[in-house]
Image 1 (cartoon, helix red, strand yellow):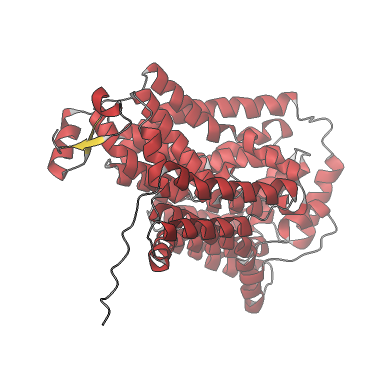
Image 2 (cartoon, rainbow, N blue to C red; image 1 turned 45 degrees about the vertical axis):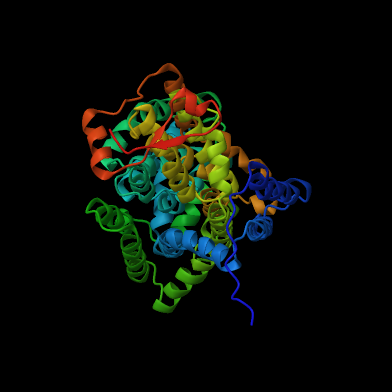
Length: 507
């Protein structure tokens, strides 16, 4: 009679082993993107998940353990997948209703090429702040702005950069945003204190971006060279194929109103789908079956104007499936890295090498960015560093508001700048940048999304100079004590041997 087998003990990965799946995945990803010139990162990320599973099994994890980690992270991010589905329906239905064509029409008739980029950033910021969703803003107002930019002969990547800057700024400081609520939640602060503490980096980055876009409009965009014949062709095609009226903006105004009433994003967006469908039937003559088709498969039209056709032939749930499949695979990869302890080992190795507040602040931003690069998930890039670094901030005596700002900027703002990240994949798909079709030059939107990368840079500069880096107040210390928060012992003697010890939970 044999004794029942005991479960294998799970070992903690060494730094070399923890880095193995990360390095190999980045190698396969680089092979696909740069050697083969094929911008479909799905299979490389799936291979990365498999490599991580092999590492996990070698460490004593079972496949069921790894599967649990994979599906836990996917479950946490399912609301974002639901948002993608709603945005896909909105794009198709709002084009059919004339809402998006009306935005393009009035934008071409009311805006000038010189102020277009600056105005695009401000408009996206206001809408995203109101809706609390950068993705919803990019997929609706952002898509319309791409059409206006095409009419003004503004390069696609400049328009996309301005749209991304504004949309993700609004998401970062909106109390309705999920990531804006996630960052303070994992660091033990409240959302409004978190938003207030982000202003010292948010305001300068937005002002600098605004000045750059305005300068580009006056110095680079040739207003006299803008093709008025082209603008006339676009506006004429829109009038010929759609009823154009300010009343057609009602679906968008309804969604904004619901957001201001603090309705959840998914019901608000779906209400926009229904309103758009009603408007399409009443004003554009669409049938109910056509509305269903537009919501599922997207809108289709042939106006004879290529700039309009390329923008308006899109939308629908099915158009989001490329992005959704990438998001799910990336989330699974990130979940496997977290479950096997690989990410924790890498982060602790980073923490063991910093000796100051400036170092830990820089490391927190960098870790969020690196998690975005490796795991492809903005939620994981906020949640994981937030959980790992919080005890160190408490040990240093600094408010965890510094940490919530760092992970928001390295997580939320940098996600659209990573093409294989959930945020970047959505931007590329929703704005029709055509990267998968070989339009690689449109990836220039990444450095041109100034507000997104300036904010973390300014935050790191503040940390080095000791500016806008609040220490923990007596009330915050007492809250740590009352809530039993972990506080790391960060004395030099503890850090000298490369370890960070957790000390008793006292203020």
